[in-house]
Picture 1 (cartoon, one colour):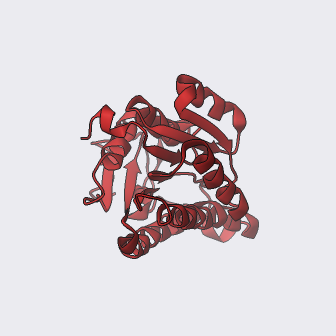
Picture 2 (cartoon, helix red, strand yellow):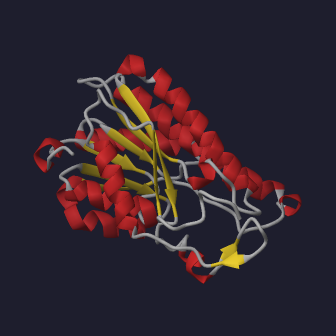
Picture 3 (cartoon, helix red, strand yellow):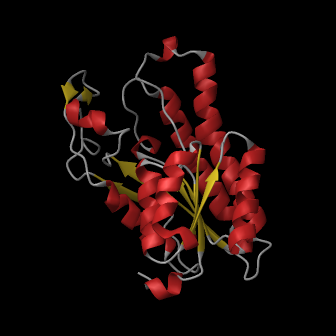
Length: 253
């Protein structure tokens, strides 16, 4: 892993950075000496994150479903820090578990707009900035999910969009070669966040049972992001899965 000194002056954008996985990633990057623009819908959590390293952190309220808002995020980051070396494309959402035939059209579109369209807007802006800066290039890490590989019951909107993120990652990785842009994906299983806290109470399994699932410290995810971020651009982790060791992912059930 690169040293803190080598990270000095390098600039990251983290979407969905006010809470959960995004916050863990932002804190890990800041702790390693990165400058970080922390983006999210609510200003208050963003301010809490940047207060830890005010001179190297920037809070940018952002709606990833709005392409103009994402463009403004990148413009504000470049204005403050001069360039963008990393995008952790993290912002996402899910719906409560429900039979697919009962999902409202508006709810379906909201998930697609956040998890797929918002992810694309981030990639697009990162490409525009990274190919124009000097030195050219940078890194994009997309937040996929274990759901990019296998669904949970009653999760069609979230699962479909996370499978689509894998397509974005592969296509952007190919298209980024000419600009020295490395694109990879992190697939996370059962990190302890407010979103995943329900796992400790029991969640539906594929066989119809309700079972408690193990969780891992979300800081481990931050460390994984930092590892991927600190690689030289000649190397890329295309897909990285980090999960609670005993969660029911590999196996039958």
